[in-house]
Length: 205
Image (cartoon, rainbow, N blue to C red):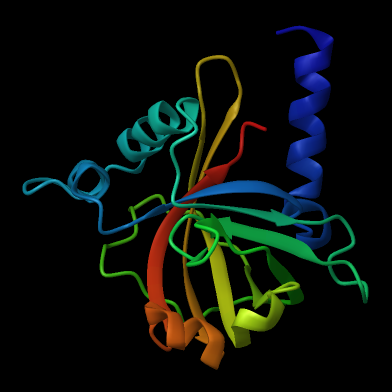
């Protein structure tokens, strides 16, 4: 193992216990209800298999196929340091493009109220959770209001044969967008509202 890899592993090992250093970054999220995801993680026989799920996610990540992408900024606990959330699930019905959504007002807790319907692995990764507020930015006259939250926590980690750290997260986001009369009159209904549990990995880009 060369010096650069050794240094990177040392740095990750020494900062991952501090949420201020651990959480910042980009993440790709994948909805738990997808059968080609939950069937891999929780097979009909045997224990849950987080490593198989992680490797399956990487295949879809390579195709830029994901449910959502979030960014948690450095200094996220500083006022005005907002992250971002983008998902094809929540699109402006007039433009058919994902809403520009901020992720802000972060809070870190040792425990979270989120409980997945799937069991945690025997060697689960115990750590703090992070929660942020979701809100549409510059929604225009078609958006009356928006609100939501995202919660994420560590699930599993392991080093691969090259010493690189594989990390798997779980969580949920709920989001509500209420349309103004302009959108409603054009046949787009009153808005959108969904709660979606997910698995996540650090984004490749």
